[in-house]
Length: 264
Image (cartoon, rainbow, N blue to C red):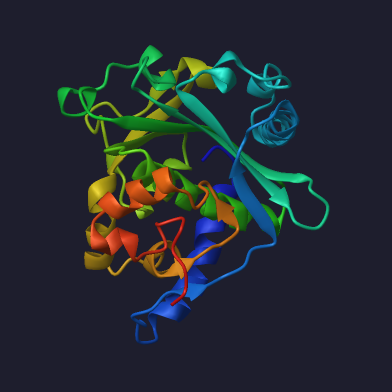
């Protein structure tokens, strides 16, 4: 994530999750409503909202980078990318955004700064970038929900790996989520699409998310896998989407990472 509040966001969720993990885990999911919705951008109006919150967030911490983010970027309209928008239920104002780019048709943005190693190069990958959220406590929750949206998108689109480029100290948040360092011997690398600010490149094997979080008794396991968030709306219930969901391993079909999951 690309704002300083990111670490605080995870700490807040960790505290709440630890309370949940202290109790016996139910076999059925719980449902949690959010004060905002999360969806894919499908109109110029939606994109304008996403750009506005993106610009505001970068302006707080990276004003030099923000100067060029007051309008949509070419990649926002690319067929290999989608923009995600979180909107307040109260008044429809934007409270968060991120961009997801997959590597099916062209290199990821971070690949203009570094060559991925062989074990990633031929895989189906998405890069999450251009994170931005509203200031304050609501932004902390939005960040965590957007991370969950990223994993949902991977499952809906047969993505093998999720990669990010994170500057210090935000890279530590991804370590807590059990992302692995792609270049452990190199460390931080300047990123062209982030004002040449040094970032670490980290990756997560999506297919093994459930097992890794379970084995680690991860404090976000219940939030990610045992909680259904109906306001996270990356997909509609239709025949093509249901066909994709049907191909998922049972552990994912019956988890909160399934965007169509419902309470029994």
